[in-house]
Image (cartoon, rainbow, N blue to C red):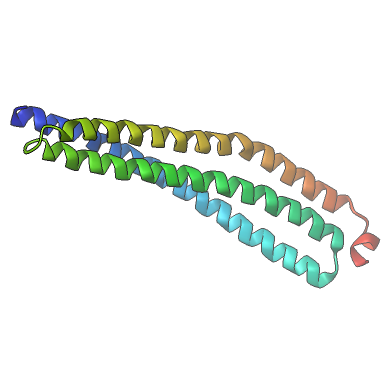
Length: 157
């Protein structure tokens, strides 16, 4: 393997690192939005408990569980994408070792394939969360419509 070929071999995995970094930025932004919503719902639930609004507490509890489910999907997307980046970085290092030990190429290819598969798993989690996010928003809209339609006398009990 010439030095030019080796340099080209280094660049290919590095492109994955850059692309995955942008993807992680997107996933992180989504995760922070979900965490912020969870905090708001927990606060609303706490205030509803203090006010003795049992119906509101039950409804908010359902929303919290739904958002926590989404958060777990995003966490998994984040984890597997990070794992893919780590593997890609190790691939770059292994390709450097091929200057001294040609067997490192086999290990580098294996790690690279596993890294891409890890990123693919992360994307599957991300897509599945995005797919349920709109249904979650519709449930939330129905929740507030239900709360708005409740008579005042129920809230006071």
